[in-house]
Length: 489
Image 1 (cartoon, rainbow, N blue to C red):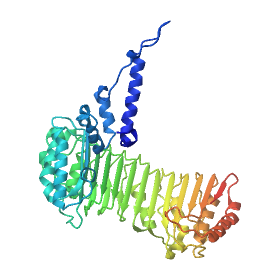
Image 2: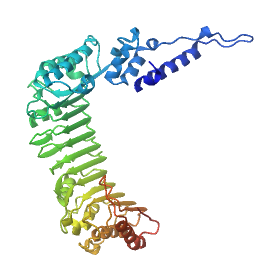
Image 3: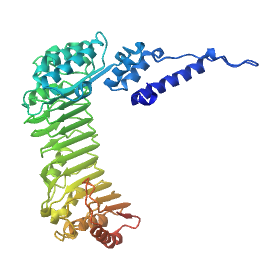
Image 4: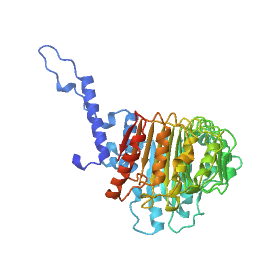
């Protein structure tokens, strides 16, 4: 086989072999003496299988499962070399290729291929074991068998990434067999990834005491079952829930003292309430629901994507739920702004330093853009503010809306960086910019961009953009603090 025909991953192995030979030659070649030349016999003919087993395992673990298995055809010595991998990841698309026959034959081919792989791992430890395939009821017995294999292989990272068959019933999920787990496997598991699975833990199940990461996608579980499981995963650091419809509160009363990352996306829930003192990243995507994370003193990033909501309702809710956030990203595709509204002055984002607002303004909201400034009033220590507008054509030089003097005087003492994109010359946008510039004496940089960065495909009108830039130069530059720099894009 020519070098250019090798899979790309095998070039990494060739590089390791060459480096190994070089280092071994350096180690075994005798030092030169006067009048004598170095003998070529001092060089070592290092082969791949001569490398330490842990290094071979590391090299092979860098390859996809299919490519690792393909190395068995290179020579007789390589025939079972790939089984030194401590990770098994079996994807139906990679293992079976494209589907050319009926569903039953396709499933059987996948089962046969998985069994051939697992036969080579009997009695060996497998650190990570993953299955990715379309779920079909004919797979249930084999899926249970593969769970048993993971238990016997002392697996620490278990992934069952199942997907529903097209047009299949969404409630016909694989029921995870908790009864096949023993005390050793329950304590050993550190990472679980479940997709299109039903979790029905028995009454005796006490959680996974050493679980660090839990990823749930399209998983069916009740509020009580999930709460009981999370309460007993005392080492959990990462929790991701995507399209898991509790139709109830996501509440965990006991402290989750190690949880650092939380993602809730497209889940049907009514409230989120957790006690996670070390939470540093929180991502929520979905309908507007109350969020209560009061004890998160180390919350660095909060990304809130709400499909449809009234702006001040969201802000007021976040006061109570995320009072200690350092960076807040708020995106509302159908943003609804209301006329002047007041906030409780006692409620402040006392740690908030960076605000990102993604505001999709429809034609009926162009007269209320100025009221976006109210979120800044509640962040007395904010240093950087980004506002990314998206509007299509509805905002071009819209003249509706109040003037900035109606907001009164504010002081943004610590604000140093202001960035606005999607500027269309609308009165509300201009008044917002002037309000901030006139009240931010420490401002260093202000960037105004006529491109809608919020949208990937922004159809620009060069003529209108040039007029919008002229508007910025005419009104903003003369209002800048002495040391501030203005960039118009």
